[in-house]
Length: 542
Image 1 (spheres, one colour):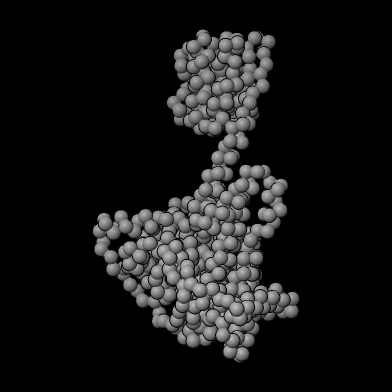
Image 2 (tube, rainbow, N blue to C red; image 1 turned 180 degrees about the horizontal axis):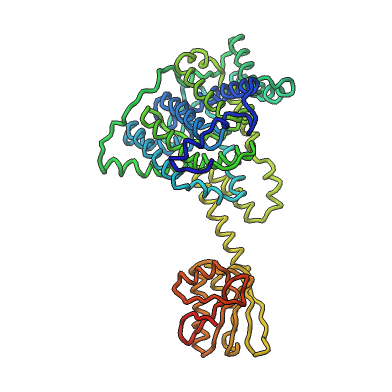
């Protein structure tokens, strides 16, 4: 299901995706689990969508519509059944300055462009580059995101109506204290205990849903005065209506929205693809990166035309879904439909749910998401990997996950390049004919090219020198330049150098560099033996 051409895209969305496992048909029991898991996710989506709308500086319904539309479309055509998408904080903190400076209509136009960019990325199959993210970066990502989810719940411990939008999220406000605080903490703890205990008694209902239901029933029955969903904002509304963003269609508008669209598209795809990998590890599924890019793009393009703030995959809600038993597209579709029903007809009931119950669910998500084993392996892994884990975690918390992942990949790549650069070395010996042979070992690339040049004793070497690359690999243009630099030094002293045992890849690189290459029969493994004729300045065959 990784193909992304539009002709085959629809064919990749097969009904088998609605099954529990490949070859296993949807049963009544499986359908019940999927629907209940979707209901659990929908309940957790409400305060998140409202909070992220506040962060972006838009009406709560803008966030709720995004959660519905993005969640529904990605559930239908996304790359990984079981994933949940919606409005996220990572995108909201970027949107806030755009809304403050230019208004919500420019946000809608930006979301449309963001979606088109994501579709383009999917068609170009750029999603495959998520493979370049090293495991230490993944560990730092999940740890940082777990901390971000935890910190996001702190706003629920403040007196409703006292929060302010600081331009970087919700801030200010008065903290709960005394009895209200202790009651809030008690209900959070009760929810967490229920989520832990319910599976030991029965698996007929998802534990998070049971925790929310029981705590909500206690609060409503005893009339406990605690913050509830309705204290954040009313979620009552109608169906999202088609709406073309009211912005001028000119170059100036594009200059305003394009930078935001590129950043949002990148953040959305990075978070979605990393979440896709995490869900895949939990459900033993692979592939679907390019399809997920297209699904996210289609979802955001549609959302921008229906008054939504856009979104991407949500690791917290995806973890809730998977741990509640959701494995198919049914759970994600059900979550989106339940959320719409909450908006249309169920707002009066949903607004009675205590925030403490939802905070308890998210705290359990934090516990389940954080890679606790990373704390023990920090002392066992190489120092560079430990540094990358901590760096990505810190940058995710202080900046955003897109920057954190990019920084982590860059640091890991530099560390890898440095480690490989130190591997270049050579063994030398003399042939009966008097020629000196250098057996180069280790990759020859931009990082090791300087060390390669220093391997040769040009002044003391005989007139015939052979460089054997059987245990090496010429990788890039810097390597070719290093070979030419060594040859030039031998040429200056009137000596001759011969290159042997170059692989087929090296053959292609040297051919592209414009040098003459001739195959040799005495080199069957590599299919060529190359001589560097320094007297003529070109490569010649013998």
